[in-house]
Image (cartoon, rainbow, N blue to C red; front, top):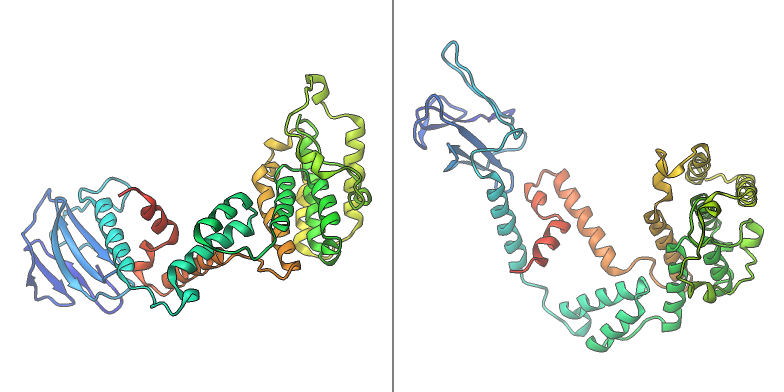
Length: 371
């Protein structure tokens, strides 16, 4: 391996060489047909070599960043076959990586927690509050109530308020955007008026759901015009109780002229709003592009019709409701996860090799496996 200011190598005489022609005894000799591997461990800055899959032990320590592989040939006609991972290695590199990851995880877990200074700083209590806050934030009311009873925690938001947010989220996730807007206007009359960008996102999503429902048997959100979206007349509670799908024959699956006219009318009303937000303009343009395809679901932008596209909008609306009540937009648990991921990313940017094995997702997956 070579770098800008240093070279590290292993010769066929078994010696190791570090920026010098004078070798040091390291391992066995090798010859034609032997498979020699080189592993650079950027976690502990060491290099070791392997012979025919056997680890020969650490050859160098405190190696710098920026190394690249080199092979030295001396006799004319010599040939080296290099494997950079396109074929399985003779050495069990996957097993070695598991060992490194496990060792790092144990090291992280071995660090002592901050000493408690009263109930608020007790790590166990803090973690319970973070889990509880996550449940409350996302409207898992029943789970939150049970958790609160088991941990002696107290709600920081009224249960009816949590249930109202849950009702709104259910409508969004069912694709009933018009009904969700109507319910939000009823429960939080000033919210969308104070957040026109959020309202426009909801309207764009409603337009997409209308396209999605043209050839679908799913219940459609009501109503279609923007004016009527702001003045819904149907009881949202009653609609939420309807989970059955109406019987629809194949002929009825074809989009009706009335449905198409309503869709185009709603689209014209959206375009007439003339938003200056570039991101909203892009979203609206993508939504309109769905109309260019005979089968929008099979188009290059068919992903817009997927149910998972409702999730971010649901989260945005939920956060806006919480913020309007003076509550955090994001639960502490998600903030901690985000901070951890950003920290690991910064560690990688700074060349700290251990960061490659301490990603939060990897750590959680490993921790949750049965021992």
